[in-house]
Structure formats: structure tokens, C-alpha cells
Length: 105
Image (cartoon, rainbow, N blue to C red; front, side, top):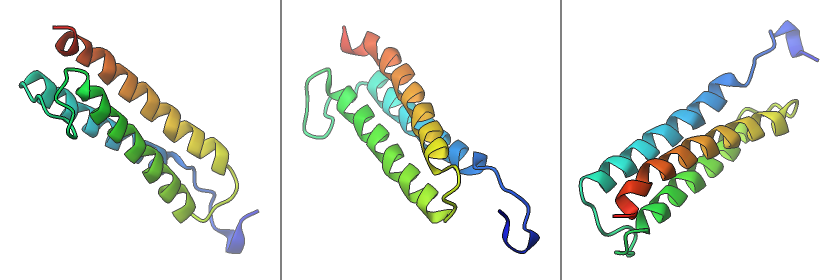
């Protein structure tokens, strides 16, 4: 139901925003990993890069909830939130695979 004849808006801008944030964070972590960064949030082991990717993912989850709650549209909340987080999972998982050569060396 639309108030005052307002056109229906899709949730794609909010979803794409989260995907872009995930991509930017993942790229930053991968670039830093390949340039030789060895200290990630106090973890100097090679797998510390995964802690940084975890922070990227956690940030995406929090931003997803904030963006979807800020839209003040209860219709489709679960679908929009699921789509945003699923896209962030894919991006961070691909980044984890891209970090594997650095971690395994």
C-alpha cells in the first residue's frame, strides 16, 4: 500500500551500497595483504588477514541493518536484508580465497 500515491521504490540502492562497501573493504584488505602488511588488529600471524576480512563483513552487517531500518519500509525488510548480507558474504568469501596465496606462503 502506497501513501499519497508515492511510487513503489525497490530496495536495490541500499543493497548495492552494502555490496560496494564490502567490495571496497575487501579490496583494501587484499591490497594491504599483498603489499606485506603483517599486523592485523594485533594479530601478527599470517592468518590475521582473515580477522580484517571479518571486520569488513561485520561492518557490512551493521550497515545493512542501519540502512534497512533507516528506509522505514517494513515491506520486504527480510528480503532486502538477506540480499545485502548474502552479497557481502560472496564478496568477502572471494576475498578470502584471494588472500589464500599470501596466507599459505
